[in-house]
Length: 273
Image (tube, rainbow, N blue to C red):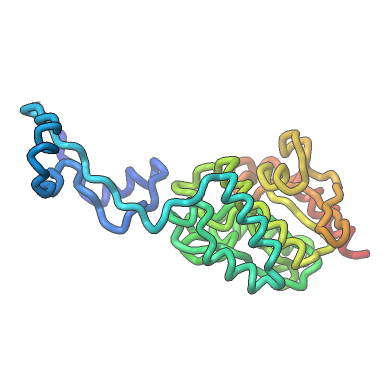
């Protein structure tokens, strides 16, 4: 029997991309089959206490050195985020705080902070869940396929990015686009709430179920939550909030674009007043 040829580098990369692996978590590749560097000679009493390695066994893999200090415990990180966000007097100051904030582990694996895009004086603010691969590369929210669809959705009601403000609950990309953990969401929540307070829009649009639950307090799925007006308290005043589908969901389920269009028309009617 003729053995199958080994895949080349291009085929391996294509396989990894299809499997969802599109980022590296360390700066350099690590060979986990090499033996670690020999440890310095220990004192005789210590050496006698160490167990002799068993013959024929592979040595333990090298440990990846952490990038910077490990993040604090979740409770401490949440408290630190609340205190830091409260002190930001402007959007620029809030962005600077996030650049230096080390309480969220996602910062250690993301390429860059994805803060916001659009017009800070806009009457409409849109908030998604977290950046994806394209957003992580460019440092702007909604710039991939879902971003292009969002632009077309806005254009359908005579809006563009110069007339809206766009952000995410989570400003750093989760590795492999995984779902953020509840702890990660709670750590980042004070920052997006302060961001909404500083923008002070007339209408808050949450894109998708995670951002709708985090900001509008919805408990049902997006199918039931969408299209209903809710109150959102910025800390200064109450504004109108509405949930709708995330553009990425519409790319997977285009049949729901009809319902999304109903939500867009409701938003256009409110801002026309």
